[in-house]
Every structure is written in structure tokens, then in C-alpha cells.
Length: 355
Figure 1 (cartoon, rainbow, N blue to C red):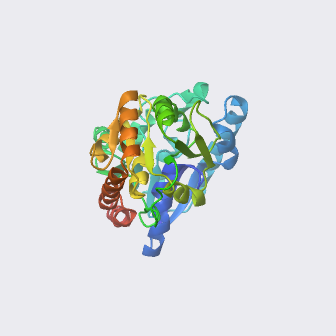
Figure 2 (cartoon, one colour):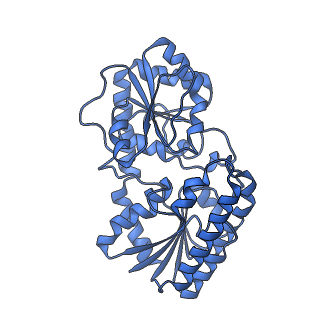
Figure 3 (cartoon, helix red, strand yellow):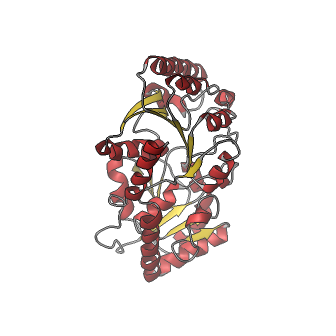
């Protein structure tokens, strides 16, 4: 079976894309399902896309990438299935996606972000009008099967789509697994991983971390794109790489998932939450979005909404190694039971063959 995957970014760049269709493709190939990627954004575009300014340069590369994507779809061979992750182009209405109807094959649409909610990028505010947020409704109607990352987005999609399934993010629990030896020696290390677009969320817990650091030796390990500091906090920055992420997180004793309040946050699936759970780390997370569905407060993690709650939860875990172990074990069980990649691959094979 041949799948044409229309995706917004080149491979090995976007975390959502990497942990959905790129990961699925690697596991489906041995089962006779071959995925060919049609990426919109080139490395030249992503290299400047999240930098402030450079509007003319961004505009040039956006138009060039659009023309290249259009050419790929017009010249591409007829596949057995079409898979669209988020959108086939970072600008404009669903024109390119509609062109794929000429192949007269089923279309599967995968959405893991609330793209139908208007969002103003801090780096590209004035280019935001090119996004055409309402095209998501067209993609819902265009598709034969919609995959939604969580119930909130799935419920919304059902207003426009004929068939919707909930397919959450999944973790390779063989790779994301607890450290072979407990890392309890030395100062407390709190872990976080993310991208340059999510790094500002750490500002939300700067105050609670400062309070905690005044009472005991504790550091915050940040695995991300851009070096950063937070005043009054012992911050250990690690540049993100595929090879570094898991072993460096395994050296932590607690994971944190702060989420700033935005129009998107109630719709978000917070992938970091299940990453930390699969590693057997007890977590403290903002009480919003998918965290409310995944975390059983006080059992497999803690939820927090205020500075005082963040501080109290972190202090409780810092003072109680036994609680960290039991909560981490419960978190690991949750990840294996509900977010295992091994189980999800069977689901995705059925989706591709059954649509």
C-alpha cells in the first residue's frame, strides 16, 4: 500500500510530526505500508521561520515552498491513500489539499493542534493572516476519516466530519523507559524538554522554583533549542538532540509541564506529560488540556494551578523519595496502558487499510 503524506514541515523537524506520521511510517513499512512524504517547508524556511522580523525573506520562502508543494502534488503518482498531517501548506486555503481529490482515493486527516482557533505567532504576527484558520473546517469535510489527538478536538471535528477517531500521542515505551539505576544521589534535578516555541512556558514556574531553591539544593534541567536562564534558578541547559533527550531526562527525579493560559491551552495534548510518565518520572503539570484527562491527581502525578500549588507539589516530591518512586511507577503504568506505540501501530494499520 502506497501512502502520500502531505505534511507542513520537512522530516526530523516538528516534534508533533516526528511523533505521529514519521514514527508511524517507520513502524508500518515492515507491514507493507510505504509512506512517501510531501513536505511543505524546506530547511531554508524553517531556519528563519521563528526568528523575529525578516518578513520579506519569509514571504519569499513561503511562496517558493508553496510552488514546490503544488508541483509535487500535480506531478506525483497516484497513491492508494492520502494522509494529511495538520495542513499541506503553511499558508492559504485548502487549495492544495483539494487537488488531491483528483486521485480519487480515500483521505485521512490527522490533527493534533487546535488549528481552527486563531493564533498570533510572537515571531510572525503580521504574517498570521496567511494561515487561513478556517481551512481546517474544509479539511474536516474533505476527509474520509479524521484522526484527533484528544476528545476536545475530536468533539469539535465531529461538527464537520463524517468519521472521527481519537488517536492520542504515543510514546515508544521501549526507548522512553525508566533509568536502569535510580538517580537519587546528589542535588534534586527537575527536568523539562521542549522547543523554542514552548520554552516561555517555564516562566510560569519561575517563582515556585526560586522558593524551592532557597530551601534546598535543586536545579532545573532544560533540554531545548535555545540557551536560556531564569533569574534566581540553578538552570542546567542541554541542547536538544534525539540522542541526548532520553538519557538526560533519565538523570532527573521530577518532570514539570507548565502551560501558560492561552486560547489554545484548553485544547492542547501535552506530549511532555506522557514522555515523563513513560520515563517513570513523577510530574507536576498545569491543570489544563489533556493533563486533566491523563493525570489522576496525587496518584500518577500532581496538578497545579497557582504559584502556591506549584511550590507545595514540588516541595512534597522533593522531600519524599518514596512518593517519587510510587508516583513514577504509577505514571509508567499509565503510559504503557494507554499511550504505548506498540499498541497504536495496530490501530494505525487498521485505519489505513480500513478507510
